[in-house]
Length: 185
Length: 256
Image (cartoon, rainbow over the protein chains, first blue to last red):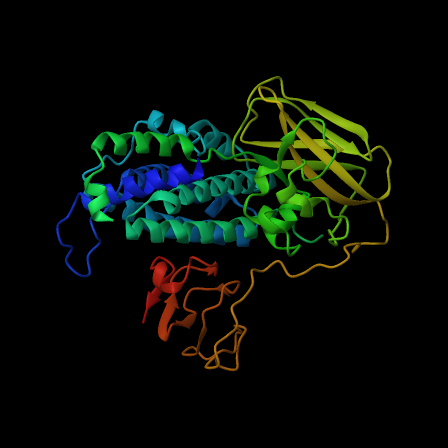
């Protein structure tokens, strides 16, 4: 089954890659993309918007300075990443968000719901920080899952590069946050 | 390759697309983050050589009713190894266990065991849990080093998620019972030979001095680093991590 999927994937990817056959001017983002690149960008853009809501709360509400600093760095980097993905989707002529049901086959929304984010905002002090860290660890684990979908079957060089960096940086963020939850006594 | 592709009818591509969607891993699920479970210790880098669990501490899923830390997964066998030097977290008689959920399955209950005895059960009511869960468990007067096995029993499947937590209970006068505690910072790349003698940022560092960028270093606004021979200045305080190399994150680093 794995081999079959691989062969089909190879056909599909090459098929998509072959479609926009115009030569790409040097130095610009190649306009080669497939369904995975589009789905990755749409899912990740919505995932980033949720992350930014949480990170912006934590920038001011977290108890420890290192948590606030991480939240501020996440805010800065993910704001840029979000813009990048929106530019791609626009250039590809694709909607910025897809019908959520289109993602059902990938295990659902992979994200944090508005109600959960509201509940987080209602907490304060140490309780806020613990809740934030546990929710954000989960959120970034989910980001890694979405990124691996892209590195598995995406073709767009920019999207593949972003997915690899998301995989690496979120793994390291989880590492940091587990440390923040478990400070030496 | 191209020639072969040209022969593939569009319908096959559509079928392939459908198959790819359903074949994508819908992964999951959850683990105890604090006090750190064994998989959390691995994901954090406090315990080395853990194998695959480092990348998916949330995936220790197995049939209900097991008593092993790996949930019977041979690829997570490291979690069952008592000789890996698992640090034990110092606690009192009551402990609050915090869960990370990456997929919120409807829940039968959460069970906690010590040495085969169930010491706590938290009903899940067959519903999805909240975004996080905190369970306060009474350890029943046990003292010394214990291993707590937690099972998150899913309501609508035959499976559970397993987390084991090493604890040092009571232990008055023994504040640091952990066998070995490797530094939690990510591995640092070895500095290149051109690195200046000052490797740790100190207040006395000359303002123009730039060190080689290194993951694990805490940088503050104005700090200068070199990366691949190019100098950058920090725009936003952060601890450097892989994936946040200066040329990749203009939000954190400005080329100078």
